[in-house]
Length: 253
Length: 335
Image (cartoon, rainbow over all chains, first blue to last red; front, side, top):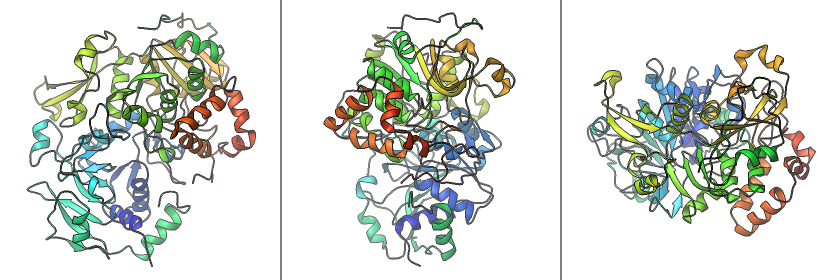
């Protein structure tokens, strides 16, 4: 069964979600991944959004976190304060896994979703943090979704919107952040994890048909590829559920 | 710089606050005033009010926003906003980054101060509570703390703004709660907040259906409040189930009946967002000439929101009508 790199990326993210996880997701492909996990490998995971709904039914794919489709059949519909409290609550916070997108990611998993160029009058302005910085600050683990392109993997971010491991081991705690941080960078070419000692990204998986060289050629900074293995392609079951149940109208994929 | 109207006897439970949108905007939204609007990206933005503000030619507004996509972007495009404190300028599929916001920032025409969504929600809550700031653990180690859009000098010249964007202090309770430090974010008290709700009575008690986003605190933080609503209902109908009500009348100064008042954004249980119209705005927003023509026809070229709805046509409004069970338009083509 053939598949696109977007589909591969979505399935790789879904595989990182476990039963019992409370999944924070944003718009677009992260929403598809969270919904795919719920249908495939983590039926007892719970999805919530920064706008406030907890465990909505999601009969149709929402196109924004404020889409009325996130409200239907939820356990509760609150607002922003309830959503961010869920990430920090002593009982629920430890179970939360976030999925974040960004315009740039650096070697320590710090994210830029604010601007390219000078902050005051940038060359390119992006939407800004939204809840991303909050999620990256609060939750014990999160996934980063990004397309593999050189300019998206710079040596130095133009603006640090959401904290990863900042400048390395111990930096989060030094600055005042809770422990936690990103666990994987999932792209259209492969998956990177973070080294336990250095907190730097290393290549964990490259997709079938992609080489570690292809990945390095699409990054400004270099990463360790010695631990990389080829990822298992999506199974027929995974692809069928993704196409028929999760995004049947190809709104996102 | 504060708006001159400060509370208009809104505490009187018998006061009829119903007025026209034209009158409400003329009275409570003045040039240079500090404003916030309700809703979130493509949902329940008070769009009828936004378009009336543009029609009345308000200038130099100072806007507070978490993620109020469509409404804020149209106010920027309409030339109404000079400064904005914002967490997120995006609008779902129609505009991953709000187009007029993006252009205005890149051209240096809009002064921006970035916060996070949670920080903005806390800032409205602080304003509603009447405390000067609230503490959070969000922002450490980021440029949201390090880079300021409004300089200390500019802040010093604007007594209506706090002297700092935010402040980090050591936890005064030692490490109680597991935190060594906290980020303090200053309260917001807008001159006016405008929200669109499903149901309100003539005195301003509101029932919001679905998510409330940060609307309730935005209302309670404001000096003046305009509520636009799908339906004006009897007070008794709302007071029969007070636990379902979101806002008591004591905060509200004007109630305006505007069916489809959030269009083209969604209003849960009434109508969905209009993907075609949102795409149409995005298409025009990318080009100065097209956007000017769009404003001339769809905003300045109509008398009121009803005029816009007539241009859109009943057929399209029927397509986005909400399904009774789910609250949205089931099967709506959103490609």
